[in-house]
Length: 321
Image 1 (cartoon, one colour):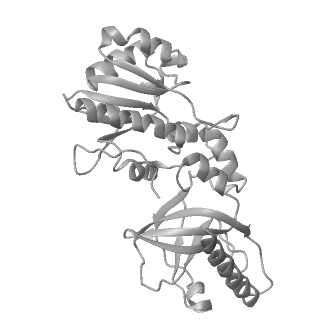
Image 2 (image 1 turned 45 degrees about the vertical axis):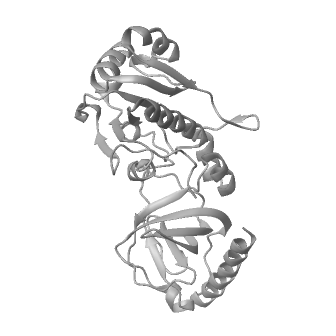
Image 3 (image 1 turned 180 degrees about the vertical axis):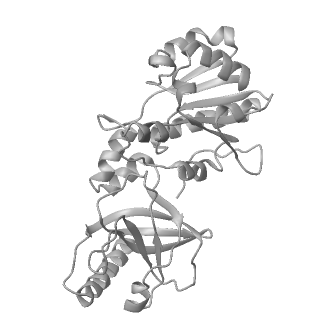
């Protein structure tokens, strides 16, 4: 269920670097630059270009992603992201040599665009190819754009590659529109634009073992990262990836109003035909289909009956795939 991006690694594992100042290498590179919230089909076009150029010219492939979360939180503007930091890192693990996770702070937004090109791209990253999207802007007051990158390319020793936007019908695929679809519960539409299933990554927590008590199925609980955009509270057909194994399941995202009243949402996944002790492991939960909204039942027995109905619905969904 990968995204189809060509894989190339100079190292056994991708190098993760927090902040541009911590990057130290004399090797020439190919760099893609942007915010990359979600790594949708448009971003994947950039990744394909980077991988091909790195392979052809023996360059280090670098993803330079501006982390907007701290700035948005500080200004009270954060409405949720498609991918939080650890999810980006996991996604890129086999798709680039280096992921520079760059906080979008004063040292970045106050830097003149020309200075950014000379100091960061040319002198620090030794860039030979710059890969960006059509609407990429950077530097103080967002005055840097693809035109400036092209004008400075010859003197700075790099070639600019501007990758066209990807459209779904008449609509451009963008993180903003995908987030809107996600919050509306349009999971299939979200996955189509992402080119891979939307997911939540987390560590399995101990829960109330209701799934095991109700019908002998392993149940896992994950608390989503607070910065992550979420679909509507409800029941979903999912797949959990545990230690590399893909396990089908049905999940409830919400505050579990029948049995408790949580102050933040929890993802409870009932795993189909799986019965192992798996607490304190990291898990990736892939979302495929929205079944119904979360609801409060009169009693636990009514909830148990609905859970069994949800399980039957999930099995039918998998049979139809």
